[in-house]
Structures are given as structure tokens and as C-alpha cells.
Length: 132
Image 1 (tube, rainbow, N blue to C red):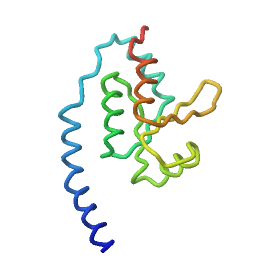
Image 2 (image 1 turned 90 degrees about the horizontal axis):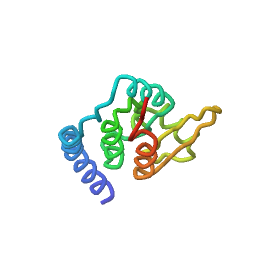
Image 3 (image 1 turned 90 degrees about the vertical axis):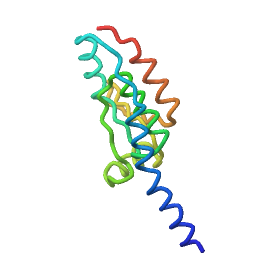
């Protein structure tokens, strides 16, 4: 019986994943218009950030949409299919839970920020109105 239930949910996931990803593409907002100097400052700041995520996770999609809206070139790390990124998330953050934003501070320490709403709020607070 367990095998049947497991196969049922795998089939559902197999069917829903492409639908979720297409919906993400269709509903992702356009990046905020910025001057070249503002975008350069954002590009520099984003080099210290990495998002650990699963491709079809709805909470990860929510964060990715915000990243696109803010025009941030943040590195996306697939913690679902890449064992190296999964191990780094577990070692550094303490658990395999996505989305997780890895923030490298000026003093070299790393902060691991979990929860999609917390990540969105953190990004908005720092990058919503970036001035050159």
C-alpha cells in the first residue's frame, strides 16, 4: 500500500511540476528600471548572496520572483539535485530547508536566512530603493 501511495504522489508531482514552472514564467514581474550606476551597485552587492532552492518549490518561486523584480543577479543553487549544494546548505545552515539565502558579510562570516517572507523582507529592505 505504501508503494502505491508513494507512486501516486510522484505521479502528481511529475504532472504538476511543469505546470508550476510555466506559471512562474508567465507571472514573473519585469525588473525595476534602474540607472546603470544603480544596477552596477546591485550587481556588486549580489555577489555576496546565494539562494539555495528547489526548482518547483512554491516558496522558492515566490523568492525568485522578488529577486527578478528587484533586478538582483543572485546565484541560484539547486539543493535538490546538486549534492554539493545540498551538503553546503546542511553544513552551513544546519538543515536542508529551502528557500535559504546565504549572506556573506564584510567580516567574512556567513548568515543563513530561511523562510520566504523573511528573505523577501530582507531583500526589499536593502535593495528596493538603491541609490548610486
